[in-house]
Image (cartoon, rainbow, N blue to C red; front, side, top):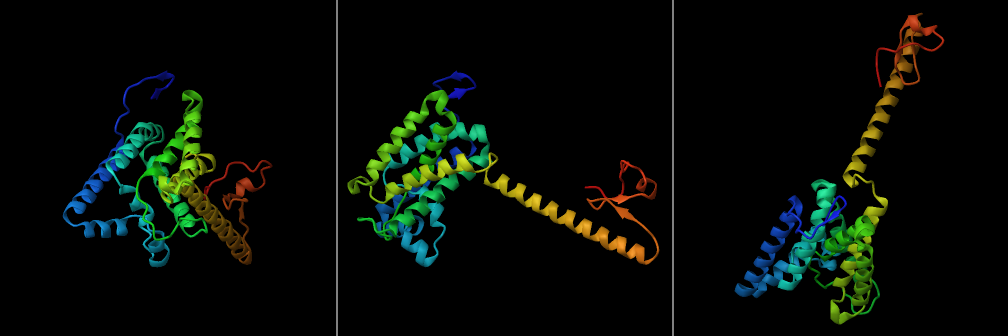
Length: 270
């Protein structure tokens, strides 16, 4: 891991969201194993309900599957590799971004990977079907790896690792014996990780949306203030009195009206 300009081989910390995602994934995988041992039918229903089944999302509105599928895994190796990659690379990003932006990014990649998987499931590609169940955090993990390569690539040459990883995923995607439709979730995670880092606001979606909201709200309030000022000016002229407001709707006192530079303004402020 990098600490400023120093490269160390120490293990990363278990940051807030990384730790919780790992715990949740391990607990749910244990539940899958327990259900499989006690009632295989119950395990099948659980995975059908919480996994990603494109047909159920599209035709029955089970939209929670866009996120819940990431907590289910198919084998011990599957969950261990995903959680290890999440810990090794995600912890560094959460430290740099903060918990709020990190979880936003992770869920963005998870949901994006799910949408790509659904789109592919309904495509004419051979060997894909909307009835296939997809499980695993690979979409989010691959998004994290893409971000890591883009943000830290020059320091750690991680961009070469990402390039090799993308190549291997693309090859595996078109090999049905290597995972079939589930591999498209990997590509979806890579794609949405790239889009987030490249095009979204540096503060994240939530920050960008809040900035836009407050900008629009303030613009609306300024418009209301200017409108009220114009109405008040008309009302006062009808009563043979003169008042003036500046372009922002701020009241100009009478002793300031004739000053060339406009003087200081009081009353309503922006």
